[in-house]
Image (tube, rainbow, N blue to C red):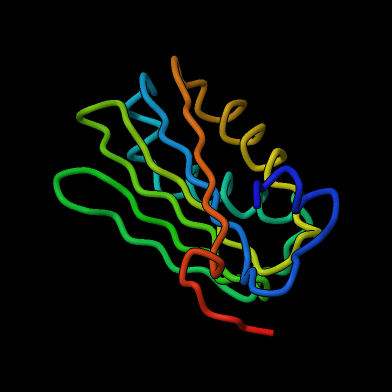
Length: 133
């Protein structure tokens, strides 16, 4: 089943959720190394997509790089940066078909202004061949 079909119809039996992945390239290294900025962007992204934030944890690496994890009632949202490469990876997993992942991508584009962003999605559960119903 495609993620677009799930967005319209909800999760069928056997589907646990959808995992969205974004790779950002060509991003200003200062933005990618600013832990407060990244936290703010990711918390706002969680809220605008309709998620319920339960908490978050962040870490700044030495000499550079940031990881931000947002714990959601619906699963998680994460962000990992490589300022020296002008790159970042973000992912969003949700067990609710009501979350709007496009709003997260919009937040990422607006805040980080990447030269390139790619998206992939993976429907979780059905690939295991297990009936979760």
